[in-house]
Image 1 (tube, rainbow, N blue to C red):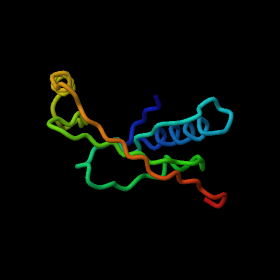
Image 2 (cartoon, helix red, strand yellow):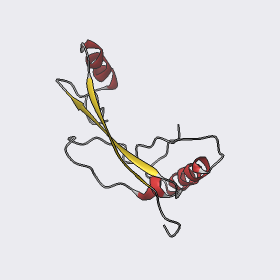
Image 3 (cartoon, rainbow, N blue to C red):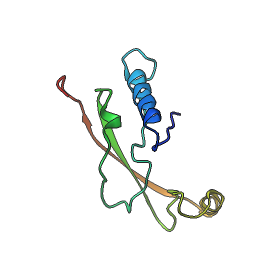
Image 4 (tube, rainbow, N blue to C red):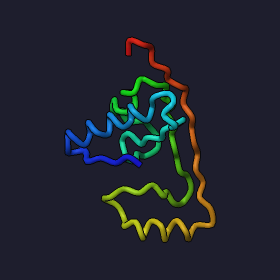
Length: 111
């Protein structure tokens, strides 16, 4: 996992460089999963992506995750505690999750 402090410019720069290094062909990382916004929405719309995932200049595929049913296990720091969320998640007989795969964006050399 690569984590960063969004309030630290040096931390953001280090993560950007780490993503570029991992995305290079032959680096041993065939795929990298990024939650670029590290946030949740109402599930109805996409929000603006930051440039970080696109910096390496490699193909990017956006994936949307949507939960439906009585319980949405997407956790946010301003919401219930992590323990409370895990407890509720374990009390559900099943949780339904939809995954939408967007088209692969392959940047051209100028980008």
